[in-house]
Image (cartoon, rainbow, N blue to C red):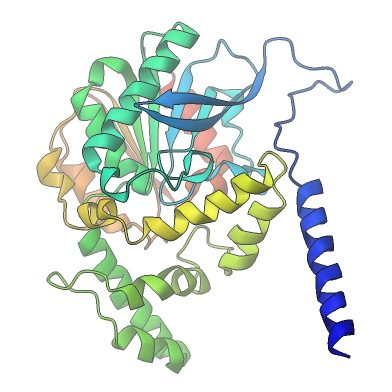
Length: 355
């Protein structure tokens, strides 16, 4: 009997691995016309380059490679694979570079020392990738877009090297992240008390977020699950991390199986990294009070992953030659995914219209 059970387990495991391999060719599909022919000026590429001594991967997507280049900086987890569920249409307006940063996704390596994941190193990496793209596509200035944790680095890059960028777009812009976490904690605890989820109430009460104690391991372990269950996580309609984020990563055909594994290996390290602690204890309203290029903030009103009210307060203080704040009334943490038509309209009619 034991032998039969073991044999069935082996068969199931082999079947699972085989299925995952079939779902993991690791190559991006080309852009095609209605007849299935590749668009002549399009680009759909997965490439790796050396970025300050570390091999790092990116997807470059555009229906017309002469479009302005947009470098996208993700947060704690690369997000390109989610565009299959949530098409952004950014490739209609830009040559979009979905770069997977040092230690994340395709750029994960166990050989990267954790202590090298510093703010200064990440900024240097962005500048290196920026120069690669400017040279490759023959554009003096490109557009820089950060999302969530990517905004922490992105806005500092924009402050340091404004001459390289046509504009900075902060989606779910960080400002004072520890204050944001405290606001999220208070909101979630209140909501769970009201809806009678006593297990989550007890867990959160045992792991308070404070200005002195920061975010404990216990809090970080339940943070994503708690936020998604209340509709204040990745999207308003995504109530499960497993169904909404993990399973889509396994079926994403542009990753190899190894890259899918590395996506989650990188994620497992991000929440306890020194960079996370730097993000928590940095007040960007003090460190970056001014930008000398156009700046645009996109923020979902239901976002508690990065506080909407804190971002709005930062924007009001921020000095820039041109600045606009856009509220996405139906969105939580990902306006590009949740209200893509509105985002594209703003980008086309207001951001790209500025020369």
